[in-house]
Image 1 (tube, helix red, strand yellow):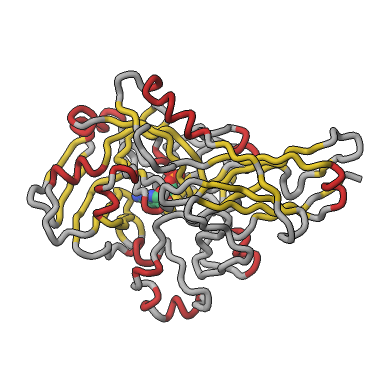
Image 2 (cartoon, rainbow, N blue to C red):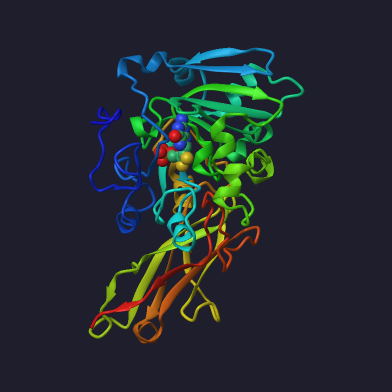
Length: 399
Ligand code: MTE
């Protein structure tokens, strides 16, 4: 029995940190096979502690307070959020900064647990554009940051972090206060009844079980803002980082936007490819994403360790959603006007069985519209976050 015994969970999810707290990813192929939208059952979960218990009948009275450097501090109930503000719905991919950390831990143990490449998921999120709520509270001139705090009380206080106020106010960035995923009220693991959802930034900024927005002049001083979600310089060892707090308090090392990343889902590392009686080609496929609303503009595959590259096909299912969003949510506001990309995309390439029979591995790398490209080499850091070197799978032939 754990503090989360009240929370229903899918047995297919792979536990990454023992019994409690709950940190899980789906098997990579199961996640990929679900397609563009991930069902709530297989959506990855990253909880730092116990899930706050909220009874359904208490949802409308859940209170969010907006305070700090504002002319007009307000308290808003979820009922008011749902009825007095414009509601928007759009697909958003959330990615944990620890996605692919396992590869870092294999090189040198980091301070985090071993995510595979399924620490990401996509859902249709419904809620209110966050800037609408902040505008109502009227930030003062000096205001620069928005601190967010959840209801989960952890060993070092409530979970909290901050983002820049000017990002929140830019509607194209899609910062949202969300209460629904794929048309149903949020499930306990994903922030029931209210959470922040920030497209294009690491999942750690999308605070769940949201209770407070505090407008400030400086970044959050919450323990989890300072000691989590950072890429410290590579030479800082676990011991050095434990002995010297200067590494943690330097806001330059805090992670916000995701960087370009990709993974191969077919074939799998341990998949036995039968090439003898197979068709002429094998279709390799996987996913890619970037951050800050930037679109992936190419995905490349190498069968010779990066000496030469071939272009894969890239499919942006998000574009089709843009077109149908209006119809899907009849009457409700869509966000099809956004110029930014909020979701993952899929790549595929047909490889000849002859090529596969003579190659040792498949490398993949993605590039975004700002020409940010995945690096060849790993940048190891003490928290093992933002791991995005070329993704490699070994080709295993049957027989
Ligand atoms: N918010 C609160 N209150 N507590 C948490 O533990 N974890 C964060 C973020 N928001 C967390 C939180 C992290 S690190 C991630 S990656 C995302 O929630 C995960 O969201 P999900 O569990 O819905 O996938």
